[in-house]
Amino acid sequence: MPGGLRSVVYFQNIVIRGSPGAVIPDGELNPSAMLEHVKLYRSLQANWQSYDAYSRVCMSMGTNQMLHALTYYVLAYMIIEHGAHMAGYRSSSTFIISNK
Image (cartoon, rainbow, N blue to C red; front, side):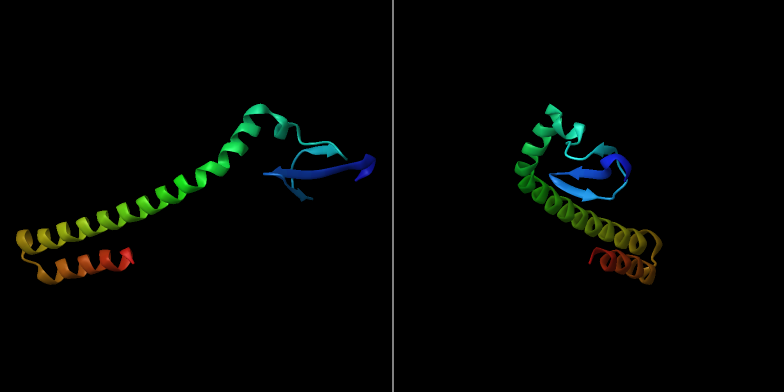
């Protein structure tokens, strides 16, 4: 680029050259990377990995339990209220297949 300018994107100390972003002179750091709250966020990010993994497991288990509860509800509703055995089994099998 003319004048020694290049286009870079900074993300967690990784420089991606040629990406769309702010055009800055050679040798200068991205000004937003030097802000205090950005430094604090990046330092705290390393401690969040265990909580992130725990929350993903809990959300997965919660979704699993919700689909099972919905399966039993639909099965009971279709069989008891409407007497439609096949419709109840088919709708519950749809939930079971989507759960896997």
